[in-house]
Image (cartoon, rainbow, N blue to C red):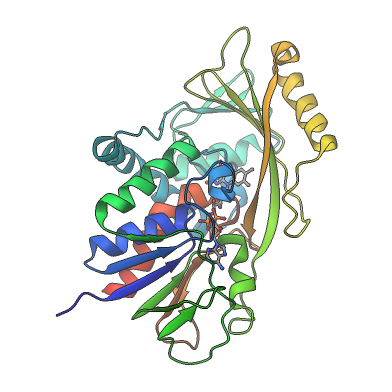
Length: 336
Ligand SMILES: Cc1cc2nc3c(=O)[nH]c(=O)nc-3n(C[C@H](O)[C@H](O)[C@H](O)COP(=O)(O)OP(=O)(O)OC[C@H]3O[C@@H](n4cnc5c(N)ncnc54)[C@H](O)[C@@H]3O)c2cc1C
């Protein structure tokens, strides 16, 4: 029997991992990305993210959010090892731990950690969670792009699909330049743009862009060895000694500009926590558009009326963490 043809729409972390899951299940997979996967200049949310593999304050979320995030995080050690072996590119997975400074809800937090088998240590500064890990998203995406090619996924980059105007069976989908892509199944993994793509066919899909800005510092003085979190703000030390400081949650539509006022605000927070950063340069300042959803819950499901169309989108703040588990779920739904 001929392999089932599947088109994956969007080449962020969710699309890349979905494509790999599908090809591992014997499908013939084409991934369509309107930019270039893993590109520094056109990278979207997945490239821009901090790469913390944990739902920052899980005790504030619904169980479903945490379940998916913890399941995703647990796949990373195996995934990163495989990517390093097969591509030679290191996604820089580090079990660095996370220090939460002066948590307002220490009792609730400790209780949640104990109930969910997440190690937690109380110390003079607050709570330390030693099992929290991080990856470096640009490295991870570079490794995934190569892995897609090695695995036989057809990459159609600089190719954009048109908004869908369809209500029944979907046999083909047209690009903005008029090319027709035919497949047995389609899966939308286009992050913050998913609603725009499907608004004529899935009005109930509640996804909107939420901008996040972030700074990259050189590190001077004593190097941080773990993530620090305080009141919605984090510092993430990278393997090469650089340091991320972020981020923001801004409801500004599809505006992908960075702003000077946010840069100053992030610098003030970073330098209050780590005064040695006053002498350090900010090397980069970028932003990404998260696929925002009301409760941080993605849609991982068949489309409500178009039989062979699937959705794996809306991962909001934790798409990097959730993606490996989310990809397994949608692939199982499409293939099993
Ligand atoms: C500042 C910041 C910090 C973050 N930190 C973390 C973190 O520490 N941990 C964590 O787990 N998550 C984090 N996130 C969230 C995480 O990055 C997102 O949830 C995740 O990247 C979403 O992945 P995605 O593949 O759905 O979307 P995207 O990465 O946005 O990918 C969607 C892709 O679809 C393409 N596309 C869109 N429309 C079309 C079309 N019509 N045709 C073809 N292609 C199309 C886009 O070009 C894009 O490449 C952060 C996000 C930001 C912005």
